[in-house]
Image (cartoon, rainbow, N blue to C red; front, side, top):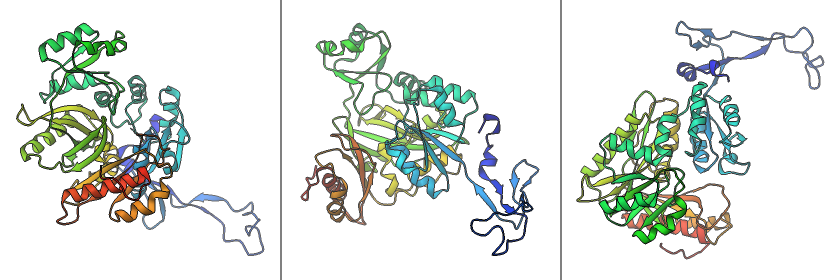
Length: 457
């Protein structure tokens, strides 16, 4: 739809189409209108009892007459597993979800009724996609900011907005914002050459962490420098643009907290979780984070909600953190993600409202759902590509080994180390956390390796 024709929020809540009916009597069994016949020239299609425009401008159907209620269309830029996992909640809410996919075989295409294949870096592709939806949101943060600004200028409803999303796209922008809000940040500096790194390390001490401001994830775009000799490995990084150098944080573990915020300001948070990384990739999430001090949990949650409000976030945001007991506030902010996040996959089965449904509610400015956990503990175990290429063949063994575990597969080709799915397991009343972790690990390992006797790590 053209920008000038976009529905207002009130219209999104109640849009109706009148039923079209033929204005003639039913045809006789042998006359026109029977199978293979026609309605005849005198039988016109007319609008019967069209909806009435109320004083507030919204459409109201005539009382007592049937109408077809239409719901908003949500467009997701990116066809990865996050878009795929939005599809189920969208169907439950009666919403239509469309994706702008990178290719015809990406994860989300099989899960949605309509998709468009195109380059999210092309302005006209983005405009054509946005013209057919009511709201645009994201599977990833890689869309160029200048293109998003143009869409916003065209009147496209973007959630999160380009201004908010920038804090997840650019780590330097994020660090400045966190400093500006007075929230716990590691020491950091923008640098353009090796001399800048050495100067920073002279103040904080070695090691330090060098990061590309944009594009890094799952350990990519991150380099730990132990001493000046390590700068040789970073030679190709210095191309004239700004890089981010940070102090190396001796943290005890990694935490994450997810919040959701709607345009009208309502915001909620799920419990703080522990995120266990292996080779810089999320391997397991435990909700809530075991043994986390109540004071730290409250402070982390308050910081995330404050960030969401001040940055104008709409939708789900993940705040990844380092726990630093006995130092400063007890935590430091690491990164932001303004979309559903791997550390929130446990909510699909372990919370009253999962992150994907909540994200859809938020971007449509609908009341947010409860984030209450459904069990004493929930464990999410990622399934990474391994020796087994026939995932479905392992289903009988995997599912029988953990009947209460929930498997979520992303429909992606198996490659070593690639995230291809995850397993959620909830604690039964009185069940020890370690038993829940072992159950999730066992199911994930069978799917990864095709093994009957799965390893426990």
